[in-house]
Amino acid sequence: NACPFPVWPAWLPNSGHPQLGKGGSKLDSWQLFDVYASTGWSGKFWGRPNCQFDTVLGTGCCETGDCSNAIGCNSTYSPPATTVEFELHRDFIDEYSVSLVEGYNLAVKVSSSNPVCLSGGCSCDLNSRCPSELLVWNSRGTPVACNSPCLAFGADEFCCEDEFLGG
Image (cartoon, rainbow, N blue to C red; front, side, top):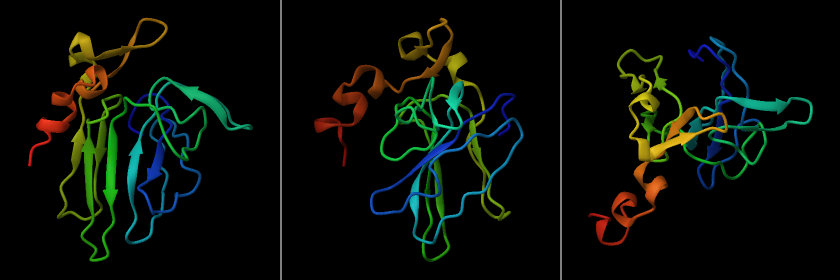
C-alpha cells in the first residue's frame, strides 16, 4: 500500500474458482501482504479506502468498494472501485489488467517480479479530474470516487449493450 492511509483490499474469484483466504484484509501505509493462488485461478482485486471495521466481529463499512459490510468479500461488492483482474494460466503466461469499467476510487499499479513484464495501472488521482456528473461524494461533501458513465447513467451506449455491443 503506497497510499498515506490504510487501504482495505478485497478480492473475489471468477465463477468456478475458489476464494483466496478470507477475501479481504487491511493494509496500513507501506505494508505488504501475499495472496497465493493456484495455476488456473482468475478473479479481481480492489482497494477500499476510508473503512471502519470492528476487527473482532469483522463487520463495518467502506466508503467505496464495500463488501456487504464485511472485511472479506464473498459474493458482491458496491462499485465504484478501481479493479485489478488476474488470470493465472497453466502455461505460465499470466495476464493482469487494471480496469475502470466499474469506476475509479484509488490509484493502482501492478508490478511483476519478472523484469520482462511491464507494469500496469493508473497512478494519478482521477477523482481530481473526474467530470462533475460522474463524481461520488461522501456524507461530508468530499469527492471519494468517480463513476464510470455506465454506472452513472445506465444507458446502453455507455454500458456497451444492445446495438452498442460491437462485434
